[in-house]
Length: 575
Image (cartoon, rainbow, N blue to C red; front, top):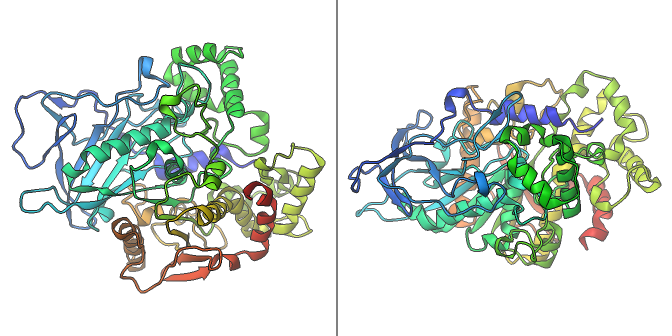
């Protein structure tokens, strides 16, 4: 069976990313045009002008923090600026209201398109504002949201700051362009590639310029994200455009070399031309296509973008129509974000060597394969379509003898010689988790250990409790295991998770937020904790298992035969 694109999208969207109607507040006219400098302590001056924030008492922690939301960090990418690299935000007169969040970026909502192209907003949450008597600056954590690069936002309905700011850090969240608007990959003077990532760079530059005004230390900025947000922070580490803008990276369940995070330029072009045909334009001229797409309505673009997936994409279980791609320096030399493929950049060592954490959950793909619990016909289809798990970067044509032979080897490695059945549900989750998440993390850390001068840490998140989305949704799995997104409820206040945490859950949440904030503050995630989490090396492949209690283990012993199998497949690519 093909990887369930719509199941994944709708489950993540409904359970994680979809905010209630009342939480979507636009800021198209939120400027107070009164003149003169403000006197209230809830006013902050940034490079573009004055902001009015609000003081918040957290119902979760009882603590107080200061909130500044819906702040533009770049010019709205509308009109002639659609598909262009972000431009510096314009100044305003008077005091801008920063007490409500800005619009989310355009995205599909199982019906009407939601959001506005005027969506490049940043939110800042701080436990204290600087004053004459207290000028000590705090570490900063910048969150990049996930959502397959096609949905989501940085809004607090999913990423409430309460637990992180209570650990004495400044938290920043943001929106960036998604889907075709953020990742159209054609070669034309009308199009800059990888604009979603360039938006993130613009936001990090805004942080460098302004974060001290909120009590944050621009010399201690950690970027972190989950899923495609994790891939984003990985890409930022690899990009010369983001050099010097941060000092640590945490990638939760995602990576720049995961098989779903990159497309070569020729494939990006093919998908864009295919979408043109879906919308009524048949052409091979990329300038003509760019003009056509620039003139289309945002509703047309967003609602039709899945039509860019090719037949081979569907057979290979590719589910993201517009992916990051390499840029041509001759075409767009002033805005290069990605000068080469992620694998080549990692192998070269030409990236930012900063302390780095990456990891995965113990059962990443549980939410994708729920239907297999109840539908026996899906298992029969799975046996016939094992080629979906053959890595596309091996370059084996679908249906070729080598591809079919490898598919059979993969099947035998995870299911044995018999036909897989519902009794193999844990084997299927393990296979898909390895293919889509774990192998990317393992390959990335091996490259970094070989080329980076900074420490690299690896973890597995295994905890399951009341704040775990897979438990909250009650999929009925016969075994426990932490699914994709299950860790988010232990880092953020999430309005969609309404279960009451028990004492065990609260302890797990305190542990997670302590690990990440201590890493942001000191570069050592377990400083002061009763566990030693050593950096990953070739000789001691240590990883931290995050459960009700912390323990360190050897990654080579997690799934030794299966990991050795994948290592052999990737040997020619990675060496």
